[in-house]
Length: 292
Image (cartoon, rainbow, N blue to C red):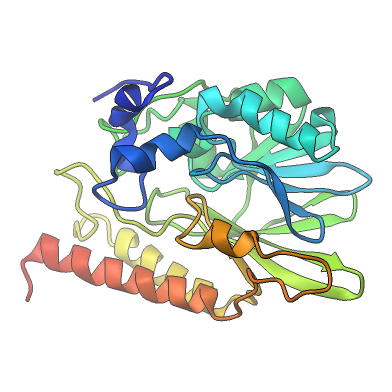
């Protein structure tokens, strides 16, 4: 299926492959275009995405960084959210990506055009974004929708740190959901307390029926995923953010208030997320090999 969803739940049906569950409800998919009031997560880190798709803004006096763009039709929403927080879209200097599916990279072309920001990504994600999602290496190729191509992308080396003014974001390869999947870490401070922020990519192993993570010709698929989970579990991790907000995220965020402990702080969240990924892998291997 090669389609691009327009506005509305029916049109979004072709994007079900991107949910963090294999069977996403129509109500869940509708949240991908549902407006969400932007808010401060911690320090200079803000949520500016839709209710069901994350976009994260990290700010500084020397320019801002945006991670993920969500769906193409959400670009005006994201820009409006940024302005509602008192920031200028034109002050975004760098746009990063978790993985190059249309529900996370779809609006990047428009956001880069409107802001003038540079786009940077892993080599495999950059190749996929330049093709508008049409990449045969993608486990979901043939069922994931295409989106506007991103023409100019800075290629990042694995483990590279990118800078915008005083901001420093470290890139972590997270292959699995796509070969070019990427996580990001940085520090955000409030007064004298600085926290380790983690934006970890999706860890679901969704694919077309003919794709095999256990294909003997591609041992890097399982090996890369296992290595990623070990890395994720070991990260300094005070607040975990993901491309699809996890259950309870907005309920916890509603409790953020000056002078009170931030309810999003969970130093065990990355370990728990990695454990979830290990379960995903075990189930996928059993499904592909028939092991019990």
